[in-house]
Length: 330
Image 1 (cartoon, one colour):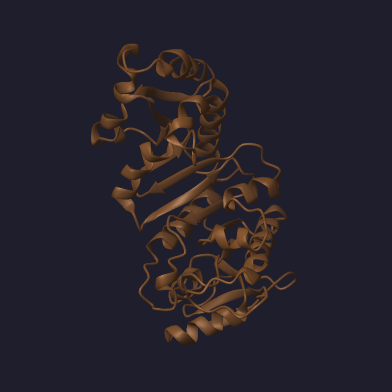
Image 2 (cartoon, rainbow, N blue to C red):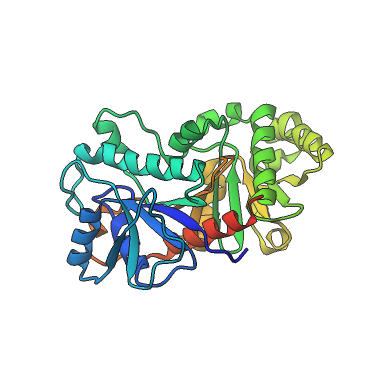
């Protein structure tokens, strides 16, 4: 699809590098209409600090753009701060502002104003400090869209890794890998690779949980009792699943060149490999949502905010991935 589409871009924590990234990105023209859901004053002040001459073009409900912004300019849906923001200095008073930008972008995707949303990093701690329960973008958007199960996938050029479990202590991982959870995650991964990435029959490599994928039960029985039977059932539904394979040899060219994604059992099984391959040029994708959402693979980097010494690589990949997903979506 080559038609111009409209996307929401949320700069995240106002004291972090998100505003910087949006402004640096605006130096080059984008193929689609990108709308920063942010404080106009914040962006103007940060642009001045960075010495960037970026034109801020006001848009909003009833006045949406239908063409990309020219190079050197950025569409802004003005969302006022609660208190002035200083680069590198967290302020709990602006926690509600951060959530308002996410709410506007998410609802805009739900009602069709946006084809997808791209998020810069938020600071969970300062939002919680403000007395607002918040565990992350993913959970926020799942609740907003009424989605029961979502899947975290990180991707860089040449590799996609999805996770059966995410932010759990290692001691709790084995108990969390149930046939029900593994089935749900695998089905969501397969469906979104088809529906949002345009892959007709995704081939997915599945990691075992234990070293050597359990070595026939001598190093753990989860593969024999849970993972293998579940994968067999899913293959009967038409999913192309290879495994369970030992994670220490799965991430080699021989295996990866013929697959569309890897399904890892836990966070630090799959993500160290992906981040070694593509840190700074990777994207975090939330699968299972009825909307397209991608994010950068890094944090707020408070110490770099306002310095100009930031790399836009991850945000650029997040944009490209959102464009691809939106174009492939049925």
